[in-house]
Length: 132
Image (cartoon, rainbow, N blue to C red; front, side, top):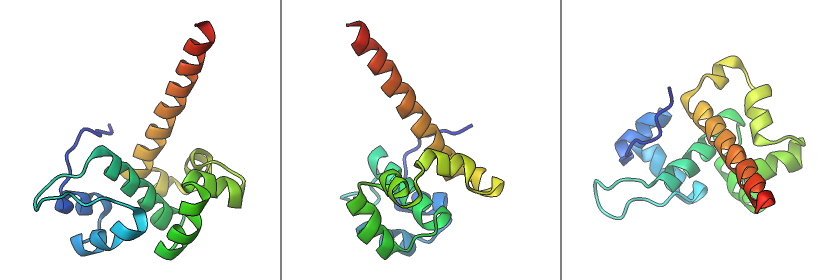
């Protein structure tokens, strides 16, 4: 089961991605992650979501940090980048075009669930708007 109601510090977030704290800190300028203001502070949910997408981009899609900054960000995010370059959505990429080992990665599963929830919310809000 994927539990997303976890509060992350730099140490626990680095452990989540299997990297050192120093490596996580090098991600900040490339990924646009906002470091907690005070020492020992916690990352908000938006920062964790950004870090998850960055992880997928560099570990699963195998982009470099510079490629992410120069190509993915200007394209409008990883989903838009994949649609532009590979003509497929992030969801399709993660569910159909990676190995089973990569699909079983906790971060990949979290991103897939997040996309599915977002799509379900969009279809629900569209249905409600159509009724009103």
